[in-house]
Amino acid sequence: MSGETNISTMANQPIPLLIIGRTRPIAVQQGQDLAPHFAYTAIIDLPNYSSTNIHLLLSTLNPSPEGVVVGGGVTLELQQEVEALIRTENEERGEGEKLKLVVIPVGIKERVGAEGLMKWLKEALEEKFDVEW
Image (cartoon, one colour):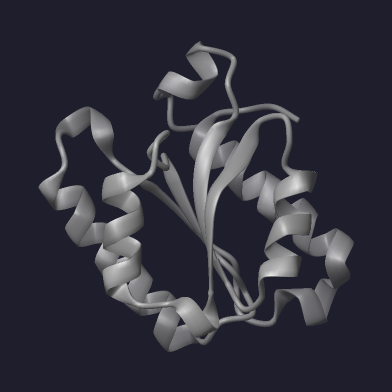
C-alpha cells in the first residue's frame, strides 16, 4: 500500500479517474463496477485519443482526476505513450498532486474473462489508492 491519503477518500467522495480505453460502453460498465470508491470523470475512447485531449482533460476537469486507467484493449505502444505522458505530467505537478497510473495488461480480458479483469483492476486500484473493497 502506498500509505498516501488522497483528498477524495478523506471527504468520502469517489476517487476521480480518467480512463483511456478501446470503447466507451466497456469503460462505462467498468466505472459502474468500481463504485463507490471510484468514479470516472472522463473516458477517452480510441477514436478520440490524443495527447492533447489527455492534457486538456487533466487541466480542466473538476474534480481533477487523481488517477488514469489505461485499458487492456489498447495497444502496448499506446499504453507506453500514456505512461510517458503521465510521467511528464507528474514532473510538472507539485509533490502532493501526483497522478496515479494503472495500466491493464494488453489482452487480459481475453485470458481471464470480464470477471477476472475486474478482479485484477480492483486489486490494482486497491494497491495504488489504499482502498478496501
